Length: 171
Image 1 (spheres, rainbow, N blue to C red):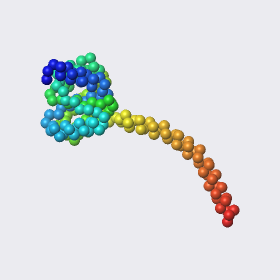
Image 2: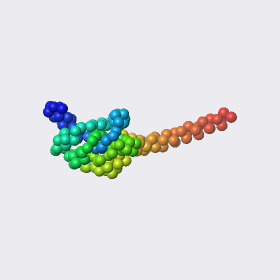
Image 3: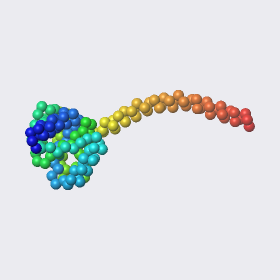
Image 4: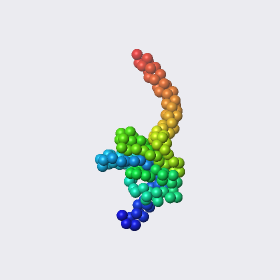
């Protein structure tokens, strides 16, 4: 890899570290290509990405970034999983680590907050952005449907009474 390629990789990693809601660092020693492709596919479905980069270049890219504290985790064969959603990458990484013992979570960062493996697990347990939006919409919509039901109920009761009276007169 020549100098220009290295500069490009450092720039790409810098963008990742700056724009991601969460970055998870893990060891992947012994994983097969198929297992890594499985991780990439799961991460893509969740809206995240997986990146393997040289630790030295990643440490250079971390300089001056909010998540600079994860530089100490970059030793050995490391892989970065990241997503804009502050929960997605942590969830996928946590689930993948349960299924695959070769994938060992070292920690990560959520903005400027450093996470240890327990912190990554705690973030993974949080509801995702979509789940939060759905629950908020549900909470907002429930009172409106209750009001519509309350308003419509007297009218349906009156209609029921009138139809009963009509039936009596007809008989």
